[in-house]
Length: 242
Image 1 (tube, helix red, strand yellow):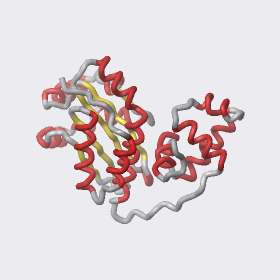
Image 2 (cartoon, helix red, strand yellow):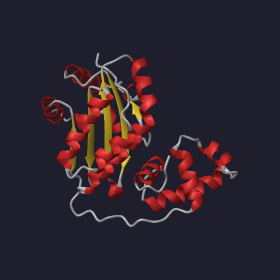
Image 3 (cartoon, rainbow, N blue to C red):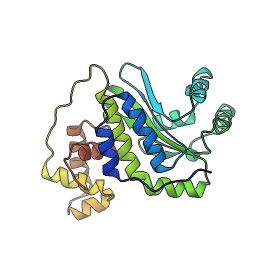
Image 4 (cartoon, rainbow, N blue to C red):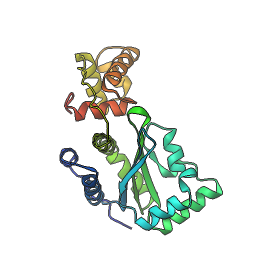
């Protein structure tokens, strides 16, 4: 069993990502992230607006080639499950009941992927879909504790990673920045520090419906696909500080 390390400082991770000058730098960063978090593997995989695929990560090349050659993409419960979700998912909660899915899982474990997995779905502009995944070999209880304690930081890192990768996409035009209103900033800040919608609405002395209006307005201005993505973008642009 590998060692699940102490979480690195989030600001240090963000600085490393922001200094990346190209896709090769992202490969170096993801290897550093894997080592700092003490997991067996970490992988970023995207499909851009033209349907082209790009990935970087720490899987052995033999496994990557085998995955492609066997057409595992079509039956992988991780891909299918994350495409239907907006929130991070523990692989154990996905549907591995089919014979083909169980065969894929057995093959993956035999190739050192690990018996645990955690993936964060990311939706970017122009229909872009990406995944940020961690895998490891450990007990269910250890993995649950690790993913829960690092969940928030990993979500932000995943979105920062995707945002940086998008900067390197050819032909991509910069997104115009729109200012958030004071109320939108307050709502996003409370969500960023972990408040539920009910708690945020109560703190601001507004209804949950009104809070939702502020959040949706902020999400639209930020060009985000969901609230988590909006929080990550607001943080990355320095609009909110937590």
